[in-house]
Amino acid sequence: MSRRFFDSTMAMAIATAVLSLMPVSVAGQVDIQGFWANQGRRLATYNVEEGADETHVLLSGVQTDQRSLIVDPADGRIPYQLWARAKRQEVFDNHTNLTKWEYVDPHTRCFPSGIPRVFYQGAFQILQPPGYVVILQEFNHGSRIIALDGRPHVGDGIKLWMGDSRGHWEGNTLVVDVTNNNDKTWFDIVGDFHSDALHIKERFTLVNPDTISYEATFEDPNVYTKPFKMALTFGRSVSGEAVKSYELFEEACHEGQRNIPQMMYKLDSSPK
Image (tube, rainbow, N blue to C red; front, side):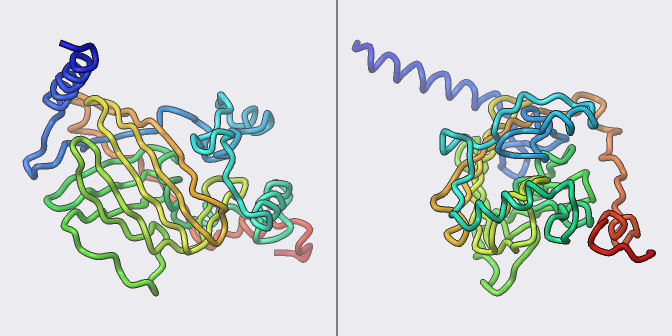
């Protein structure tokens, strides 16, 4: 028996053994239901390319390892077109000096997170009713409904905060195609952005019963010079008997609150 054949046989045996341990739901899907949270970069929402600066870490009390979420290209940078990099840099330079509405993080105004920010802004819950995967976000009660029945995407004229998701299973990996995104969401606080031509391909791989490996490839010919890929690891935030009584936290974000205009110092000094 050749070494190559032996290695191949062993790999297949290991893969089969791992898959046999994966829970399968009654609907025929791999069971990924439950409560999850990002287990990697804890301050990814601040800057997907670099982490958080020292001041933000000090104020938040959260440490960061400074690694980029971007795994391709290897330098960890979003491959912006020149004009787009300049626009992003302007927001980055002014995100604590809010003299224009363009510098204000959409989250601050209670807008939905978009993808992939939905996964690193607090905890989330996955449900699997027949024919669907549903993702409920703790922050601002966001949600995604991923249809698995092969239906086409909605029309090109429809643009959505969370995009339009269609999925299917490849073994223990949920593959999701996301189109129809609007151009209003950011990937983070410092202004990493996209246009409404953004196309996302996601892969949720159940590595073991308590771990999901997540990869997403982003393509937007209006803003980027080439596609790029992000990677995250999700871990169960609640397990065992505790799941039966656990709920996502009640989290409120109020549209139109007067604190937002008051943040816009220097733009308008008249009394509010």
